[in-house]
Length: 179
Image 1 (cartoon, rainbow, N blue to C red):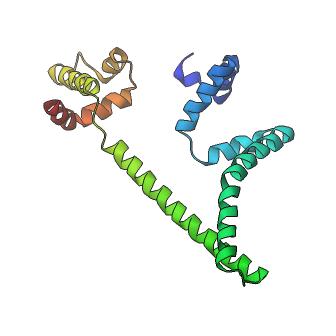
Image 2 (image 1 turned 135 degrees about the vertical axis):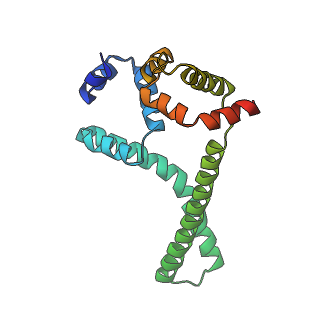
């Protein structure tokens, strides 16, 4: 099957042939490169009975995580402010939860920034640096022999990847000097 003939239907047909464990692994791989909207898209396509089952699973997880926290917060507020009317209690509790969510969102944002920075600043794999230098050197020595297509075939990469490596030759040379 050539890359041009790959369609969503063809990929799905191959997916259907996988074992249960391989299907789970495939979905994990998809999850790593998906956006937050993807689970909602998939959920919207589930048959009604599976959608309800999925909803129950998610709700059960959320309730088991959030309910104990909310209960502790409510108990603490009730002890600190026993004189509050139900309406005042509800208003203060709502504000307290909103503050907690803002703090949580801020912490998650900081974590995401730190994770992105760590990923961005990671050390280059010496093997990849060596391979990319080899590609740059071959192309520099003989452009007629080492065409972009031939390099792509020999290194089993897309042509665009070879172009990108060659474009960043200076970076690869700098990294090669460091390793």
